[in-house]
Image (cartoon, rainbow, N blue to C red):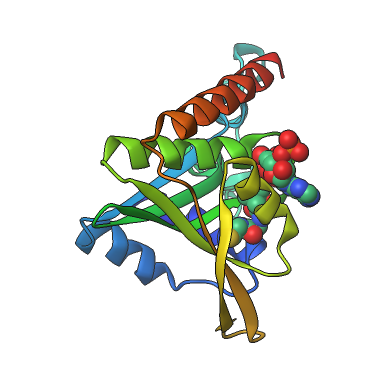
Amino acid sequence: MSDVPRVVEIERLAYPSTWPPSAYRKELQDNRWAHYIVLRDKHIIEERVAVAQPQEAEKPRKNRLFPLSLLPNRPAPTIPSPDLASIIGFAGLWLMVDEAHVTTIAMHPDHRRLGLGEFLLVSLIDIAYTIGAKWVTLEVRVSNYAAQNLYRKYGFREAGLRHRYYSDNQEDALIMWTDEIQSPAYKQKFQGLKAELMKKLEAA
Ligand SMILES: CC(C)(COP(=O)(O)OP(=O)(O)OC[C@H]1O[C@@H](n2cnc3c(N)ncnc32)[C@H](O)[C@@H]1OP(=O)(O)O)[C@@H](O)C(=O)NCCC(=O)NCCS
């Protein structure tokens, strides 16, 4: 729940139209078929903690009598919580019978093209396995080639079109599905791609 404000911030940067924050809260509280994840950058946590706890040499001396921050009308600087600031991406899915429907997946624009959007998708597919889904499906804007490339890499194929699906610009949605994820062929492809990605991320 406490991650929702940061998720909404990233969503605004990533999508032309957004869910109200209450929709996320409702999803987390009321929808037992929904699964949401956030991706955190541990370097951001370390940096923010270092800023919030200055080194010994930087600590204010005892005899400093009148800190400027105590002057009237001078608000003390606020340091965003390291935990919130460290969130750089998020994703979610719903399980419907034996289908995992990806509802959202987004990376903060400053952290794209590093393999992390792919890491989110891999994490969703891992969840799909854990909850016993047989297929993974999603809708994507016909103009969203970056996301479509990512999905195609993981074996999603076009299965149809929803006309004027997006209300902000009446854009069509491509409907995409994986093959059966429990099949040996898909498992092998998925495990191969995941291993390659983990190697790339560990080397970075
Ligand atoms: C889609 C999104 C999550 C991808 O995140 P990312 O971290 O930049 O992607 P990655 O670096 O993990 O790339 C993984 C694959 O995605 C594809 N891809 C990602 N960005 C791409 C781009 N700008 N152009 C072409 N292909 C791209 C490639 O196939 C890439 O694999 P490769 O590195 O082997 O070429 C990100 O662009 C995003 O948040 N977009 C806005 C929200 C959105 O559109 N979500 C999808 C809704 S359906």
